[in-house]
Image (cartoon, rainbow, N blue to C red; front, side, top):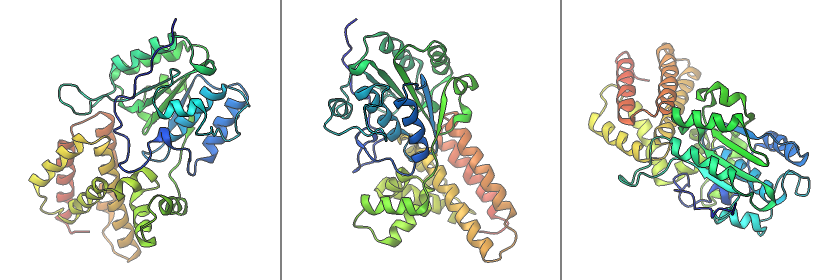
Length: 351
């Protein structure tokens, strides 16, 4: 069959304004263990048919996926390329990946709803079914076809079952790269058919060094503050540095500060904003839990007593936001529920 003409990705909703998209990024920060494991498998000619790349948002999962894809499309599963899987930017395969025109690469993600103009809440079965046609066509340059699913967490039940069928009978010279923020919510049968590449949050030193390169005009104090709030995520730190991310961090602090008497209208407006953002609820949840945890630590170091109810609330928040993002729940209801929980605890004394 003829090679397909690769359509551009449906949207760049995962691009942080003012910074390079993962497909354009050559640097992978702080993930040497996962990178070395991937390199050994590829260069030995024994890669798995599917890798599950896991870790919190913004720590390099997509960057690693595109790095693996570029190497396979340029060199195949051989040791002809660099040991760290780097591919020169002027390599034809690398240029095609950046231009979203490589016939051997398919990227699946939540699409934009043509009727509403908003990002769809799930990765649908229709998107996953594109894999069958893609893998059934003639291999791209180098004989390999690579599909990136960003993120597998976004699949609905029908999409997950369709993917499982593909994993049960993987085609030759093809690789699936599944990105997941919360792999525990994927079907066990999907997890069992993939090899894991677990990425870890960056340490503060690595994160601050990276921020110095990305934000040369920022002060050391500003970079330290961003690193503290970002929880080891370069993506979260850079998002914080933009207007939208900084606003979300401020909203998180405001919710805690006004815990006794929450502003319901402001919370409804916040919920609508989170609905319009890619991973908005998850990002806000990360900022909120990190801010609360930071305040608890500060009070504990100061010798304050009676923190048990706040520690328990922190655990409930992590569960609530994890459940809401995993089930694609409506952000406004989640935000209102969290605010009520804060209010009940705050009546016994503010943090």
